[in-house]
Length: 408
Ligand SMILES: Nc1ncnc2c1ncn2[C@@H]1O[C@H](COP(=O)(O)OP(=O)(O)OP(=O)(O)O)[C@@H](O)[C@H]1O
Image 1 (cartoon, rainbow, N blue to C red):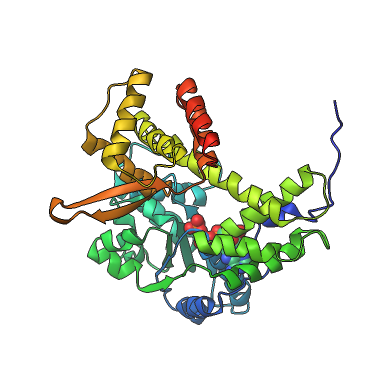
Image 2 (image 1 turned 90 degrees about the horizontal axis):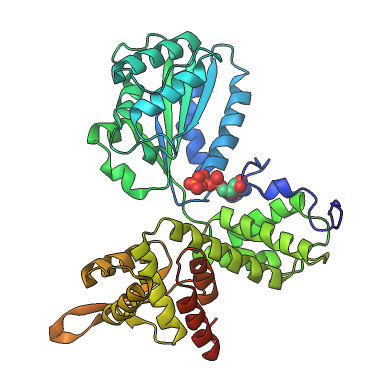
């Protein structure tokens, strides 16, 4: 067996490409930072903070910019004796009601051993306990609620918290809420009263374009990657791929990190374009697998039907044709098939997940119909499918047909 050996030809500090790294510098967000600083100005001036709602797609720097600015704000207000600032951050991802977020906040503020249980209290009791903790800290408190959309429509806390002082629930403490979300619908679904308070200041972070992503990658590569370990054009390529797909800095950084790991495993000292291509297809496969995990058996069978059509070079394919393929697969797997209408719904879900793309065709008097094709490489889709459906011989046949047709 080989020994573990330290590898450092490619990476100088791989953690700097990871999710928990906090960059010293934020690139390409000058305007947003200006606006954000304006919204935070009342804190420095000693007034009641604005409530801020920050939204934009995933990976566009909402959390990074917030962390960076709040660190700065903390340092800068230290110069003013009459401002006492505390910042509490909670990620709401696993908390799907006001009640749960309030419990989480109380428990963050209490010393170990003093936590309250996450069930069993009336909501107002938990809110009261929260006000008690906030009042005990005093001064100005900014509460950051990341992924705030997880709270869903049980959003009373978002209404109560910013008004706590006006409603005499807090006496001297000044509270501001910073809500962060990548769900564009969330804001519009909020109760209008919540909208008015929480969205006092709204900041939108647009997706990055390719040159912006390239700058972000360059500044991160300086910290993360060994000297002369990236072939010329590779950062541009990663940036272009991520810009075309999502405009997400996370995606661009993930591509670079994985490309570096692939280069490392191939025992070369240079990250090349090929490694980025390989990283892209692996990440795409992960995305399909992740999407697939959420699918029901029928969703998977509907996807496999499209994969089978793709192997025969028959995509884009109409729902009716996909449905025939689907019923045949159901027969082979001993599963009762659903009606065509339901399969159509599964196909539109797969489209939402970015696994399929759809085209609307107009067929004159007989109305419109949709046709579908894979929006991910054939290989990624079939690889992801092999583990989860017990249809080995069918999947082998599809693979054979695909290789005869040179479909990859
Ligand atoms: N402008 C930037 N300069 C430097 N690094 C950035 C910038 N924008 C994003 N990043 C980096 O990209 C990654 C993703 O950013 P971040 O977590 O802030 O995205 P987000 O908008 O909060 O996404 P999500 O909604 O998924 O939480 C992080 O590693 C972050 O450090």
